[in-house]
Length: 112
Image (cartoon, rainbow, N blue to C red; front, side):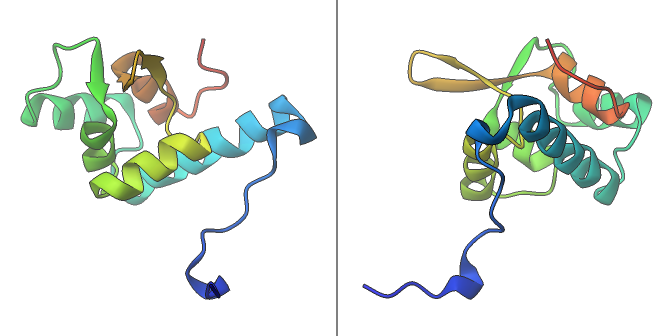
């Protein structure tokens, strides 16, 4: 089976190349995506979360986070698997902390 390399996502650095470098690139990618969809600051992102009825929740699903970023469901999960969307696993579910998105909207550093 031949895969067309033009449709493959850009190669991300492997985690073995350094967790700090990988994390910095992932954080920058998420912040850049927030800027691209007009959610570059905490207040704007909070307003958008409120519009979607997600503001009062501690975590949101990966597709809900993707919707904020202008991504579809498949692209959202792909971004989460790459580490571009910070998430935690709870059993088989992947959840995104709203606080992490707000922190990233501010262009913040490491999400703890």
